[in-house]
Amino acid sequence: MRSKLLPVAGTFFLLFILFFPLDFLGDFQRKVSLFLFGDLTEWMAKSLFATADARIDFSSDSTSMFILVGMFLPLSLLTAIFMGQRYSRKILYLSKEIVVLYLVIVLMKYGFDKVFKAQFYLPEPNILYSRLGNLDKDILFWSTMGTSRLYSVSMGIVELTAAFLILFSRTRALGLLLSVGILANIFLINIGFDISVKFFSLILFLMTIFALKDDWIFMYRFFILKQEIKRKEIESYPKLQPFLVFFRNAFIGISVMLILLPYSNSGNYNDDTAERSLLHGAFKNVDQYSDIQYIFFHRNNYLILMDKNEKMTDFHFNLTSKNRLILENYNGQKTNLDFVYQKEDSLLTVSVGRYKIKTKEQNWRKMNALRPLFHTRIENLK
Image 1: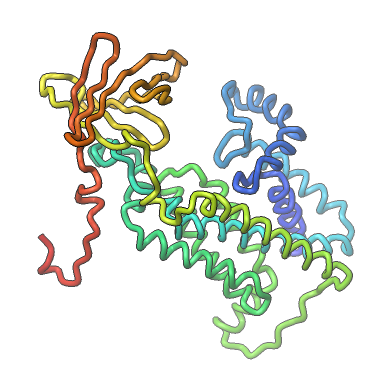
Image 2: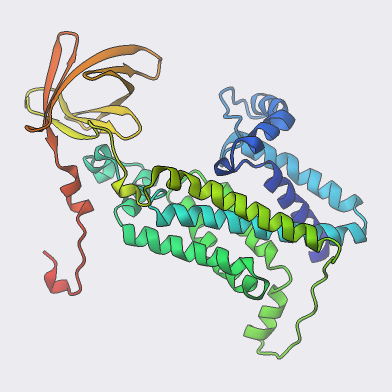
């Protein structure tokens, strides 16, 4: 059974690595996948899943990703059935090497993002001023993690350590075992908090299991049965080694460069301190009788209005002049908004036509969730 499943798994993982887009490596994969599978995927989404507005971008947990994986499974099975034993061993060897390389790159990407605080970013002001019970579970989790730089950096170091261990053959099994724990935890978090990378994290977890295919029996006998056994020599292909070494080193080098380039260009290695726009923050309406309670300016150019019932309405905005924004809603309708910001008094007045709202800027960075508290003894808690 194991000998029949492994070639299917190896072929499937190769197809997935080739055609599932990793955005941080550029747009080439997405373009190739759209060219080869885009029209068929769109037709299947409409015909089989009755989804007219499906995202045909193959992002995780999208209809297009499920369709793509659904096409790869039978293709992998047929390939494994008609593949001779000699080619089957070669595919298994190549697929394991490529899966290992893929895991290294993904762990590096998410590891560096955590170390530089770009994954679990600081919660936005509109989130901080929302009631906990009004937040979706995924936003709640993401925001909570974003309040602690220590946790983010620590987890990033763990993921980078796993990637570094996997790079070398002598420590590869240890690195993969560490990755099993990391990815199992990530998958459970994604399931438990409804975070939309569930399927991708599951496939990464299964990849680590597959990459350890030559080590599970050895580890079971050594650690569980306490047997002294000699490990079998893993089959290799000397003729392929120079190509694999060159490809591995080139791919890792280019990938690390692409991962670190945005940080190098910005010169900022802690997203908590990254520069925000002039109006970024929270502004409280000084008119207590107004239905609008707060105006928030999100770092991604969104203006968000919160009423007294904490219902939020958001608009994308563009700064067209020193004192004017153009607001755009989700229907494409645009509105001019004039503003006057008095930095010395922390006052912001916004005008839409004849309507004016006068607001006072709030010091959202001093809120309890963002205070750098640490208590060694419970007596110190207040």
